[in-house]
Image (cartoon, rainbow, N blue to C red; front, side, top):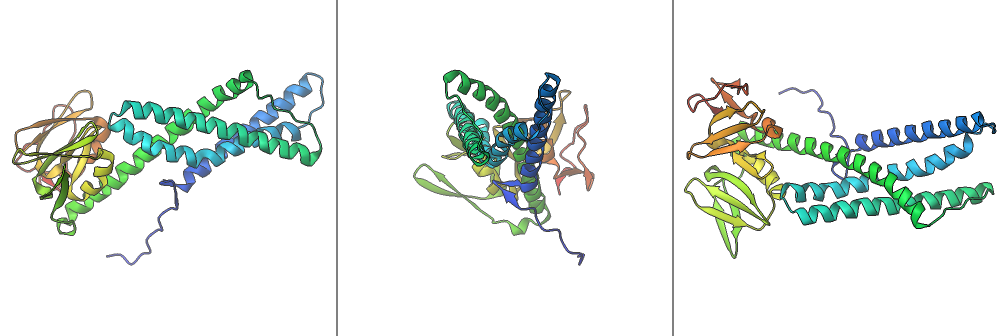
Length: 309
């Protein structure tokens, strides 16, 4: 084992590397600065005096509040992703509305308070029109801004989850004894002990999660795939579709498709469709004594020689 010092993990805010928020802040401040320069330049072209200070202050009060609200948006995206993956559409729509409206309200109130404070400090006049037309104007801009922030954090959280799950699964393959040798499933009023190796797949079923075992038994527990995924990853049970996890130890073959998606053949005879978004999830599978599993159109991995690394 190398004695080289290991890099310290990056500090996280709302589950994401703080540098993501720093990047968002830099981009927001840059946009604000460019807008201020444009306003000052347009005034000068119209015959006015070129002054950068005032438009820069107005712009920074807006983008500064946006940068401060970024972690709150990321906190809202996390449950939104869980609702989306579990197909709880009503909850998804409700969360989207809550995030956007809350973001816009906090942005407008914070921006106006800063502007009034700055105006009082420098003894200049400022007035914000709280009319429905003005609020609708601000909301349209905030809708676009919040959407872009939400998409950024959605992608960042998806990448983080894929990395964490992949690392946990790889660790389990390298050292199976490190993981517990059983799972407890609460099926209605009964708690059932299941060996992880006996789980074939786990699927979303509305507000429940269905565990299917090699014996054919099905166990329903009240949970979501998003909550079950982290505790199952150490056993090599990973997400291969938005609605399904599969035990890599039960895979007997892989069949790529022209679309980039693929199918997994399981040792109980079932075939599971998988999304190309989760191709990295099967990186723990190898063929020919250690070579990486090919995922090229027309190639398949037969049961003989297929293993989990």
